[in-house]
Image (tube, rainbow, N blue to C red; front, side, top):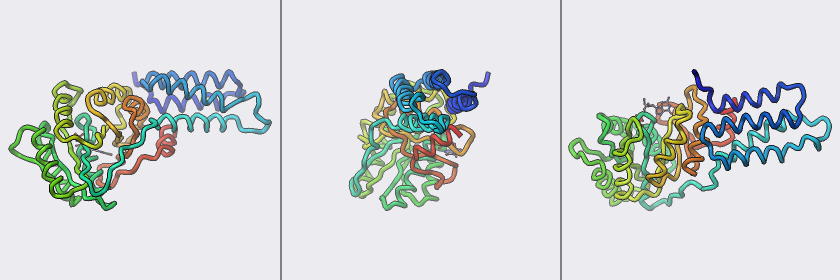
Length: 296
Ligand code: GDP
């Protein structure tokens, strides 16, 4: 069975409402029920879902609408706006101070685009005038250091890593120390991933966070993750202080409905999206564009 995506289900519910001959309370209720089901099944927290339902119902008072008002458009707009506010966790992204050694640690499962995003993040900030650098503390995946080294060199971002040291926590601490002493103001630490959520990964991640005391921890998530988004994001959040989320591979087919669940689970804002393999295919997150695409 192919599970329909969250975006697909919401769009389906909206379309059904749009296509019904009469737009009355009943049609609105039915649509909201379907949207709420889809969101709850994606593990978006119940409070946000109840709020979406309530806010759309309050905004779309069908009985009091003047003749000629396009009810379909009005309802669509209300749902759109509510999905946008669902992507706002109410917390601001961590503010970094220029001229101070800000340490940002990237976490996520293997293959989600963590290393690629680290380099993109460094490059993005370097172009904005930050003195950025990269520490490769991924000793788990063979070739991780080479991969980072290659793309960091291409991006002209200084990097630190080791072929001989096997303790990732030591590498992270040494790298961060060195760059702190050298006056870098954005020190990005790439950590090991695993294929799945494993205790060993989380233990290592916690030790690393303790050793480098990051200003922000960024959770990197593949947009194609679908229903597992909530549990995965929550597992990371429960171990370390995730402060922001990056969603990758939005250039693919996935619409990224999992982002709603990730925001809900981490109570952290999405700050950037990855839109390709190339270093500059990386953009600050724009809520309206994202929801437009989710429903498009
Ligand atoms: P990690 O194991 O989490 O560090 O993942 P990598 O950074 O090595 O990325 C895994 C694969 O995903 C690589 O082939 C990357 O080129 C690719 N990738 C990462 N981000 C994006 C993206 O935004 N779009 C596309 N199309 N591919 C990406």
